[in-house]
Length: 293
Image (cartoon, rainbow, N blue to C red; front, side, top):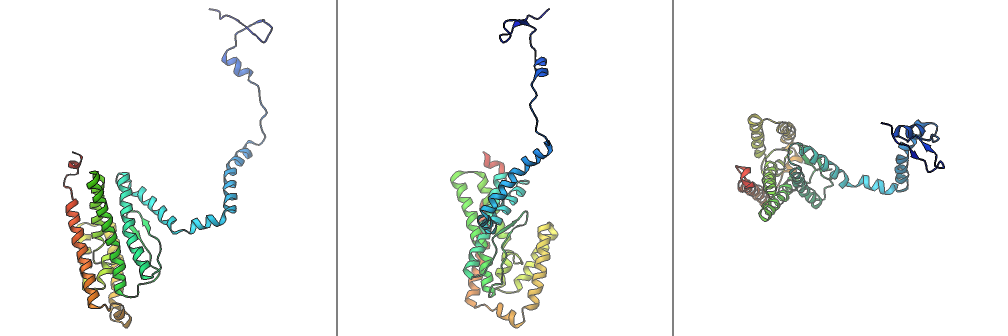
């Protein structure tokens, strides 16, 4: 069947063949194109970089201040750790877990400031936790014990906070975080360097280090994993160095602790172990599915 013709209003009423899409494409006007398409693309790519560069030059002091800020490295490593733990756990659990580690590390930071010891901001290492680098050793074993115990003390409060939120909201996420927080801080009280417990018992007796070596060795045999093996290697070397230096004049001065302070450290150390073990027992759930009921 023949297609009807339509009058063209722009052609003084003369009949023409109907215009179809293919005809329009053939009659599309050609616009002038810029020469050197490759250079045009490069200019478009470089323009944003140039703008950023000008801003950095103009606000150089602000940029340097941001780069030097201690919190920047902590924040970046926290984000990386959250991403790493999110590969194994739900995202919000990973966030809460990293926050609990941060609370623990801030205990060390605050005590280091009280002791007048310069130190780095907390730096997170995925699957290994976090660390605070001391720029000098404490003046004696008692100060080192206070720094070591400050992490589990504040970390225990963080776990108790998660437990409290669970009691208010009945959200299972916070009960799981509380249990993990209690476990995390209890594990750190193993009397083995570089863990916090190893620093604490240095103010009590070197015998506890031998107990720590035996405990970590038993854990490596029963449940070997890279973290325990790393602790055993690093801690073993550090303990050997300290054991050899314990009878030197410097070593004897470093580990000389007043009996009263020795008792206070023992009460804090074993008291924390009891509280954290009780917290783990109270927040343990044999069947997590029951929480959803």
